[in-house]
View (cartoon, one colour):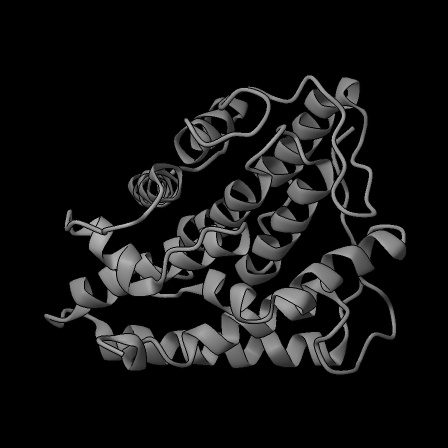
Length: 272
């Protein structure tokens, strides 16, 4: 039996989907075949690498992250902090290379985690599902014996039953469910955010890889954590029926708001 996400389609949700779709079309029209796409891609990659690692406590600034990517010396930076950033850049390149891949396997997820978390884990082994119990603040993820089966159900649904769902919604659903399972002993946050980006790439939403969605999460970390926890408190309902207020509790709407925010300003990020 595959995973079945719980959420309700409301007028507010549909409105957000339509607004994001309109922004995407405008960006595709504006950026097609122009010379500055590589600069936008490089900038977005740096912002995602900085933000996703910063969420987990990495101290490097955005300018230091750019320096690491360019191979420049970054004085007085711990090797682990530098390695986390290098790893995330490698993870982003991995999903960019596989942007046209039709299905995601266990091996793909394990490889992405190995790339992102190699040499920087406090516990467990990179590229292997956890063999210990973990705790995330007040949240207790499923027992280790259930991890492989839950990941199988998620991937089964993702690969075979999710095609009709908007890529923006699907990216958020995959992100939340992966974090709920928490399949690795460490590095779940970075890997889950990379998987969410991968879905936007695979489904052709972010064709040019311009959106730094991780930056949105980093800029409002308390709300990001609260939105994840809120779903757990509502029985894993990612968008409960009747949820029609500002994006401060529903993880689905919060994530969509992030995509909308980032997709509305890719040009403004260059050189800023």
